[in-house]
Length: 126
Image 1 (cartoon, rainbow, N blue to C red):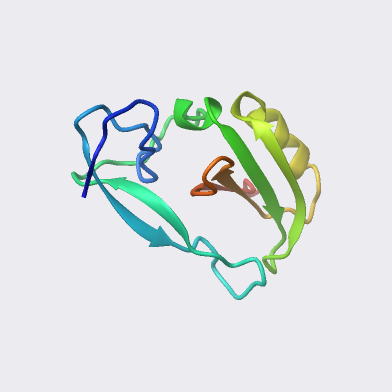
Image 2: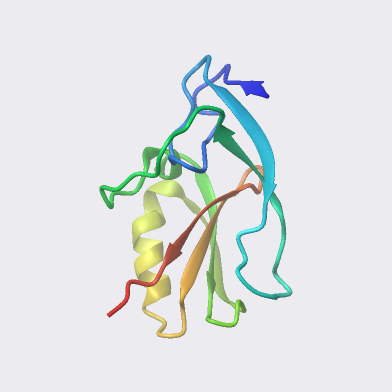
């Protein structure tokens, strides 16, 4: 178990919020890939020890927009199409650019500094 002692510093991957100082978190390994891919890789992620829930407002979380990010676009076969390292304030425009490619099915977002998986963004269904 970890106790958050800085903000930002402990990004919960369930609620997509940075833990507040004193929040208890667990550190686990997670592989976001759904199928077999040469890009598969487990990544450490923090989760609040207490139940929390994912945001439902459709807005980009502050947790993502205030960090440097590595974003990677994948097709339906889990093969990488494009990638970029960006300031989180550019996440929205980067997602739009990646999804302009009709083959792009999901974008995997990672914390660029430590390489931890942050979230997946799926193509909206038509």
